Length: 466
Image 1 (cartoon, rainbow, N blue to C red):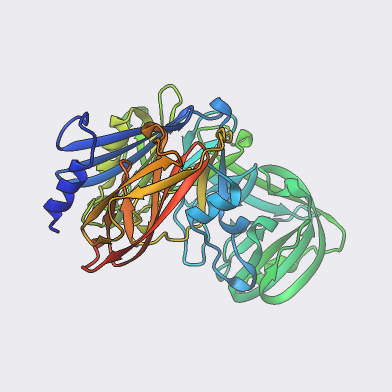
Image 2: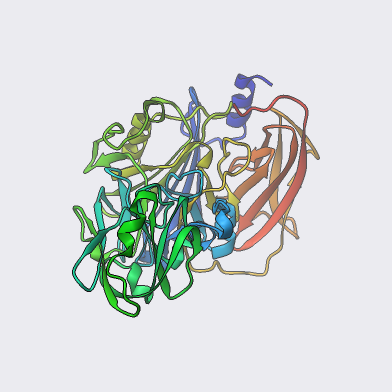
């Protein structure tokens, strides 16, 4: 099927009350207080997913989640996790990918989880933060240091990341493992959970592990790894059981001492209603700024509503957007402030029971961290769902129509049903399943906590993913 044919099939599957032939949309409210809007544009081809909610209103709770609950896995294994896995592990109702990350799975920018510093900010890059109210936006600077009993100061290069030659990095249990490509000296301190919080805390020196490249961080301890050229600096003023002072601080336009959660990203898209994309100053490459890619963004309206947007890209269904176009989208959706998050193959939006967008890699890319929304459990009315189909298989570029029904044949309210898919096909919120590439696919229909799955095969043809 041609691109035009695919788009005609998309438009034909949409409700008659859609606003125009160029833009079609479905509005879903799967639970009170949360709206999901899926929009399909035909010229140029574009699929946009928007979720709107208020936290902590309606009993919602928003958290920053780190992949597999630690930055580094044991023995140096890359610690990343798909959005689907994070959603299932935590029980969140909504999960969206967050910060950029390195090849080792380390979040590149700021991360705070439950008041604990997980990752220091990337210089000049933007971040989102929150406590008990709506999102705040900043590009903070950080400072960390250990002070010996004699008053000597050891400045820190980073937190919970690989220590390069000459770096002095501090690791908490959230980091999982102190690591460096070059040998260094590791100082081990006893510490309670408050050591990872911003401010000043006391840690007690216990021992040195010399000439090491890696060390597990045990609960109740922190590890200072001075790597390569920095190794000799860590061997001064060491006396067992003496107390040292640890100081961690973030400085910016908001009160960072009151923040419970934060996630890095960038660049900033909107500031007080004005487009403020300045990717060069936040150290992003021109191709990331100006190329059309899948995107993820988070913003807030002037009255505090939170808006999450994921734009599909790199496919025949959706070409993606530039950062300037993404900023305009956020403004059109009423945002006063907004920031870009990691995009490309990382862009993934889990809602209710699965991923609603079409990841550009064809499968979800494991990521370093995510923003998760926890909501009151939907009312379980004991109903059993099943999915009916107009065909058993679908070809690449072809489609079949699916319908969610109760055992008795009655259909649930369409505006409360969420359709999700994985594998070789994508389903829109009208329940139309499109073949994307050869292989197996699974579709899930969700309604108030009840769900049904539908498995199919996509046959023949070249992938519609670029």
